[in-house]
Each structure stands twice: as structure tokens, then as C-alpha cells.
Amino acid sequence: EEEEDDGESIFEGQISCAFFHPEWRFADLPDDDPVNYERRSPVPLVSLLRKSDIKDIVEDGLKKGVSISEMIHNQNEQTLRSVGSNQLKKSMNDIRTE
Image (cartoon, rainbow, N blue to C red; front, side):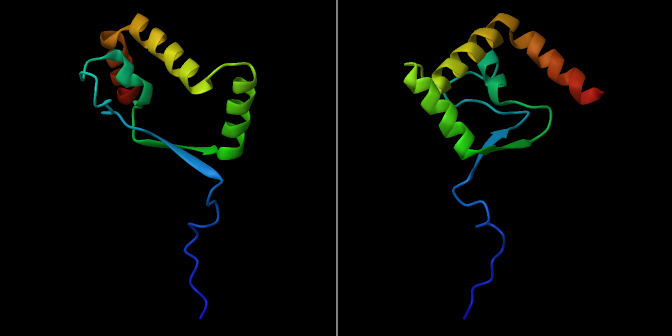
């Protein structure tokens, strides 16, 4: 007997998901830490990423001796901290009310 395909296996192993949410909070950070905005969005959001693209970018970085994910996080952290929680919160609220 043939199993019914519900469509979930179509992209199996090919797609990675990145989740964003208005109330996202890293477990080890206080709620008002600006770094939480790295994973916040005005509305719940799922970003679909091709694993092959991610793999290519990571491998290219490693050839250069660079951890891409660490580099991105460090740049995001520096930017978010320089903007600050108050401005980030205001910007997020402004987007939601548009």
C-alpha cells in the first residue's frame, strides 16, 4: 500500500527555517537587551533558507578562516547595542502601527 504524501517530504533536507517573533527573547538575556531584536520582527515570520546556499557561504568563510555565523552575530550585536533598546522598541512599534 502506498503512503499518502502530505507534501512535507518535498523539501526534506533542502530547506532550513529561521523563526522571528515580536516577543523573541534569548533565554540568557534580559528582556530589554537590544540583542533580542536579532530575532524579533513586527509579526511572526518564518524565513526559508536553502541549505545548499548556507553551506556554500559557510564553506567559503571557513576557507578564509572566518566563522560566518559568529561574524554575523557579532556584527548584529554591535549594531543593535549601538542603536539601543529604546530606539529599537520605538521603531518596531512604529512599523506595527503603519
